[in-house]
Image (cartoon, rainbow over all chains, first blue to last red; front, side, top):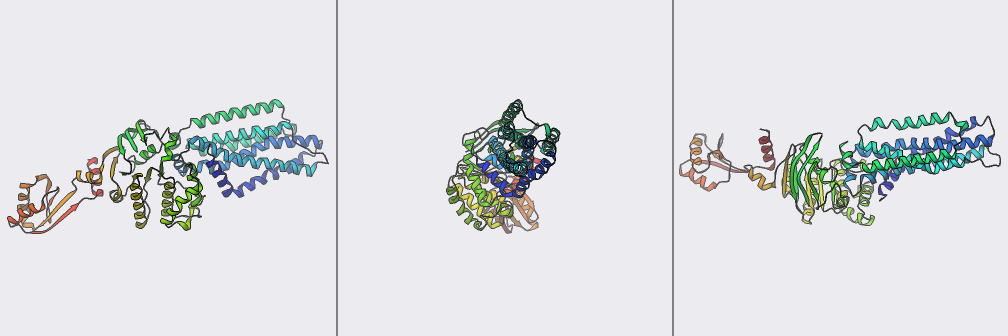
Length: 232
Length: 304
């Protein structure tokens, strides 16, 4: 992998989407801290705090990760397709698979970085606001989800969306599926926020599912040919 | 360098290209002409590995560009869409594309700085390509391709939208590259341009290759030379009969101002015949049809 496209895309995103990135960097903090405040009214600060932070670190992180990626997908994939920049790119000595993977990695890297730093800030602010000398941390299981399953799952989803944007002329319709999944997932998981406690089996299943999705997305990316993209 | 052997390309049962064969040699400037939808873009996409032929073999430097990614290092393509990232500066575009070919920053700079100077674009180096005019983008796109030192340069309408001076500049550059041994494949609607710089041409129509030859041979083949003898109206019939005695009748035509001969003839001999028979010749013109006229003629013939 040459990583030239990866570097170029990261540079472009930072240069052209800085205000967007800053907005989405602040958004989770603005949403989550007041939400914690209302949830902490009933119950033990340490027990409830741990549950809330675990929820934030795993479920919210994934939702925000996908939300950031959603807008970047348009710029990084779809724009290249409609302006025929992709066509020029594919005449150079790089493969379609490289283009797909490096573009997806660029989006995943930026989105994950924001989510990860956000979670550290949230844990930090939470402890300053509510903790009394004892450090409140999310559960180990949720941290493992943040460190492994989320980047793998997120990257795979981006790769699949990138694949669709390149290979289908109905991308605009497909692109609405992603926010539906995000908000559906957020809505569903928020209803169980107070009893949220991921078990080890959940961690293992999440990880296996993420790996399966990763292999599936890489498999189909490898299968995609220049002709599929040019004639779509 | 470029080889199309029996290429057919079908999209949804429609033949975009139908059994096309031609070869382009090293250092040759090959022009591809044809109407919109004739199959020029499909041909370029096939030679750049973007499409796979339905049948036949495409070879670029003896390798299949669809399956062999390494051969992509040997050619560069300038499409009519420029292929420039509008959010990047001119220089960043150059550096990005050259990095894809494994060219170092220093080498790339050594290559693009003189070209920027030559095309008077040095002051635009740090400008986003979105802010460039159409002509500037066209030149920038050409420089982007040249940085890679390609052995084959594929150009789709390289001078479209350029002022005459810039067009001339690009033509001179292409001639230079050809002398250096670079093979140039040029698809264009500008037939004067094709006539001016191409060694050979291919005429494409509705996916069929009608002719491949040197410009001169193509023009010759389609009655290129016209001799016009201006004669007073009252002598036209007599002159026609006399000329028909020494030139095949189908090549001689009566026109308002005299006689038109549509083939290469000895004009001194015709003049001698006319003078000997006391037919005053008021004037004489030799016309050579341009490629543009010939092209129109070929297309009209095909439409019949």
